[in-house]
Image (cartoon, rainbow over all chains, first blue to last red; front, side):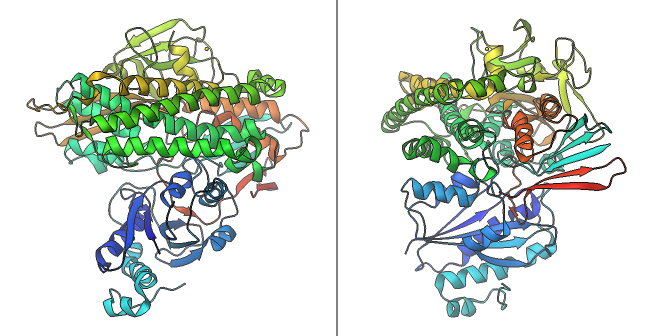
Length: 171
Length: 463
């Protein structure tokens, strides 16, 4: 099974970079015998969909901003969950298409797109100030998020043995 | 006074918001286009080596990183006083042309076409690229995706990394082109030319062939008579990568032509209390408020402006003409015998001080201006991004569309709100540069307030 982990966000816009940081952490901890590709991007929509072509499973990590969010909370969603939390089709990348629309376009074009798309979303605090530092609550969740993803990639036992945080993701 | 808020605006970068204030009679008193502030960019840059800027500034925009990379690279040429060799200029322009084809393709088919191909009054759920594909057929959709993929491949091949290129150096380009790569790019350019011609034909059939759309495009609501800005070469022809800035008046006569480094002599910025973004205008004409015409310093810098500023046309149409131009330029450069010259670096020996770099970004003239100490460490940074040029015209277009569609007693429907949005979508504005957080709740919402500020009606466009 070909798997891709994508860290989404802008690494110089404070908490917006949390997805990229989690992806970097995952890359650093991946055992060499687990064949997983890891990349980062700041683009959503069609470009994000095009990155997924040829993979069986994709794990996205992104910052989540909403009024009721508690910074540093980790969520694990499927595409169906994304559909229910994000009622607008134009949401994720307003400049071209949302991920859901883009995936639908890709499928209709006959592109080979993953059966399984898992989204790890982290509630964030500050995405309007330039800076490479994350806010403390958001920075603190990186090991937990990386562990949860590693658990998906190499099996839960492996991740516990590796244990970067000792905790399990709250989902 | 009633207030209508459209928040956030669908299909736009950044989380902008439109506020429309109605008077007691129910007519539009004022319309504001408010964008969120991204803070502290200059503070982030100061103290860093200038040569990092092409890789930093491309992060500030999630839509056109390549344009920032290029403007920044050119600012480094000026800062370090190095003249790139002819092959370097050609490689950069070849790379930049591939970016233009990909960007204009995406804008037209994903952002503009839903309004015109699917129709402005279609249900919101159909007004997206899926609706476009449904209307024009799977084959067209496939061509759009293929055009994007093959040009992104060229960007990665030439830029050293996809999306966020790394090849730009002061006076150079880190990667020469091999003959094999050149042949591949030439083939891709040929496919782009065919795709550009096909897209223009489609526009002609679907938009220009529909009298209702033509009437709408030519109506007062969507017409703006301002000064127009664009970059031109020595023959006053459009160029995206390099040239002089030419401004023409609303009648098409040349008003001024200047070197990009002199932009501060010609452009000033007006400040309004309700937004952090400044409104650039022509200094020599002056700021006369949000009005168009020859006496107002407001100017546009869009695909249409670029064609007007060169030796006219609707903006979406102009975008497709530019797509074809970019494809043809790409083919020309890919066939240039010099393009595989391996000498793509020059030695940088001069002391850096100050430099301006300028390109035509898809959304308007993009200017980067850096100041450094003698070690090349940044002390000051100023950017005028593409969309900022158009901030005043956007505000004016929104108000004008609102005035035409909201009149005494008119029932405000989502179709009308979409027409107001259409007025600024054609600028392809890109204001919040790079905030890509997953939204939890992001409906399109219009709130109407009465004279005392109480909410009297709430219209939502959950799509």
